Amino acid sequence: MSSYAHVVGWGKYVPARVLTNDDLARMVDTSDEWIRERSGIRERRLAADDETTATMSIAAARQALEVAGLKPAQLDLVIVATVTPDQLFPATACLVQDALGATRAAAFDLSAGCTGFIYGLAIAAHLLRAGVYRTALVIGAETLSRITDWTARETCVLFGDGAGAVVLRAGENEGGVLASVLGADGSGGELLELPAGGSRLPASHKTVAERLHFIHMKGREVFRFAVRVVPLATQQVMQQAGLPLEAIDLLIPHQANQRIIEAAVRALGLPAERVYTNLDRYGNTSSASIPIALSEAAENGQIDAGDLVVCVGFGAGLTWGAVALRWTRPQPVPLPRWRRTLWRLVYPLAWLRSRLRRLWRRVMALFVREAPESR
Ligand code: UT7
Image (cartoon, rainbow, N blue to C red; front, side):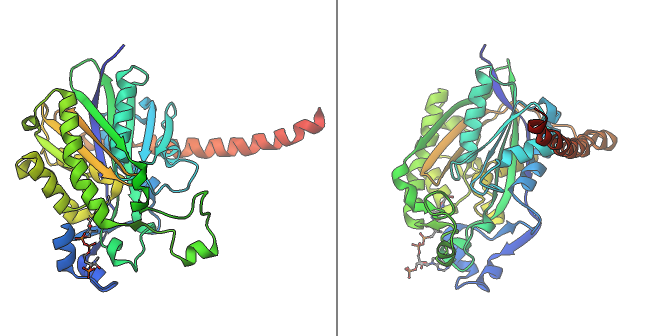
């Protein structure tokens, strides 16, 4: 049975700590003027020591579930798109699943560079539309500050931390995700990479000394690629949706560079007011940038029920993708305080459940250890 996949909840989290261009100018040989002119960024957020991709994902997910009016136990699927997972494994999505108490959900991480959220959204929508799952949580989250070389001015001025999330729900009403296009070109992998820490170059004194655990990017080449694929993917997804470009009410591009966004908008012939940007405040947060922008636009009332929203991304891989969606959710009415408090009780309970399961596993381990001897 096929149905539609609607966005019914959204949320975002950005860390409190702000790093301005002037702060950066005191760290490396750069200036506020250069950063603003070349990228459009004024400031970005940096995670505190106790914040990670999982903690930010959880905060964004809780908001998204609250807007959706759904409990974590109703989730069938949790996807975290990220290139900065808490650990290589277990998946950050599993940490999120546990912390939320999404006891029925499958959970996995998705690595598609800055296009990760678009990939996640497209995959989740396909699963919902095919009737495999009913409810999915798709998160884009990054702690890029932990893989940023704070001595390299070419990259350190660009990136920031944060997380955004949406809840998708299957429904019979027309709307939701109408079309998606995804692309990849691995021949451009070396243009944007984290060279070490995987099976090819495991962590060693040498890789650390050579600063290979940080982002390496050929900015100009990535720029050229982005200017080409953003309009292309947008055109393709609208074609697939059977709609003209003029039908776009809001374009939400990956927030990497104001000049890339402006070039794409010119190529598409869209008026500037139909394009959402917030990279001046958050910088490039990789796979978090689109869901943060989408949540912010929805919160600010810049998206109304009936609007056609296109999200378009590009990034490491190289990868690119776009999703066209018909917004169907009216502005949510905030819950009264007492109901919100009651609602949030599921999280301490999830914490307790997790601790009890760990304890139970330890107790069971004692018995299992004795089992072979007693045989
Ligand atoms: O999320 C997806 C991935 N990333 C991107 O989308 C990034 C795409 N690329 C870009 O956004 C731009 O290429 C950058 C913002 C990274 C760089 O802008 P650009 O206009 O392409 O500058 P450039 O790399 O051509 O460098 C121009 C000059 C160079 O000096 P020379 O060789 O002309 O003397 C750089 O050394 O600017 C210099 N430069 C800087 N100067 C001051 C590079 N970084 C800085 C800096 N401050 N932070």
